[in-house]
Length: 66
Image: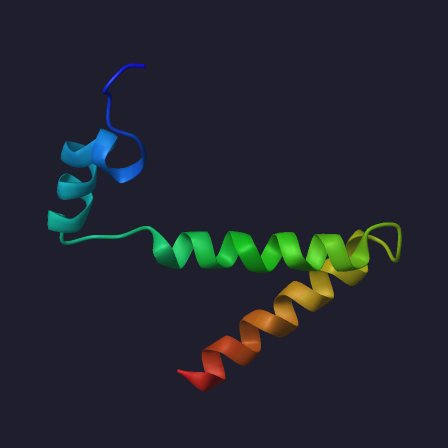
């Protein structure tokens, strides 16, 4: 057996760099997650027009919440 670390320990420098950075892409990742959820919900149901309407509706709700 080799003694190489696994998980976070294997990427210690990468994790340290990610924690130390002042910026994050979590906002982008959140939007991608919402889009994937909508896509899965609508798979085989509806058209591109319906998807566009749902996305624009969700975007308008987010604007009014902030």
